[in-house]
Length: 198
Image (tube, rainbow, N blue to C red):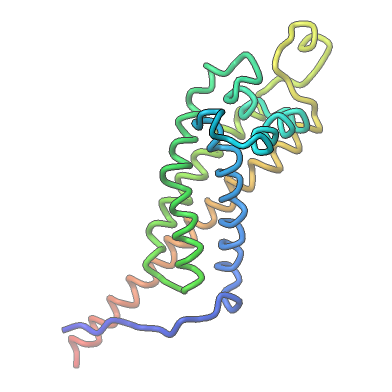
């Protein structure tokens, strides 16, 4: 019979990375609910003040991905790949964000595997978005005369400052949680080996 390692719950404030992840999750939840859900929700079900968020955001940042997906630019059909990511965010990421924040609050190590999946999926979603933003033409007289989708250098920097953290943080989270799982497995193996010697 093996003895499992049981540890006492540590307060969230004593675990700075878990606290950081919880804050990140709590920031990510409203962006999915207020922006991403609009992509698949019938317009009549979305309150007017929520509907106004996307046009305001697109005017300010010139986001060709959100703007195109919402039909504010002519390239909406070219962004079917992003719409599929929206479904993944709503059906998988959103529940995991709630579960992850709660489990990390409780110091539950059972969430680590699911957070590896979340981190991997999220950074994989962010990467093509980043590539798209990098490759969108810079606004010029030619893009304006052709009515082509383009962004200014300032908009590109702002958009990258929004999208890059959704790549870097989940990637780090996935690596961190995988490392924690490896440490837990190693601890269990050593405990089993120790109990066999007794």
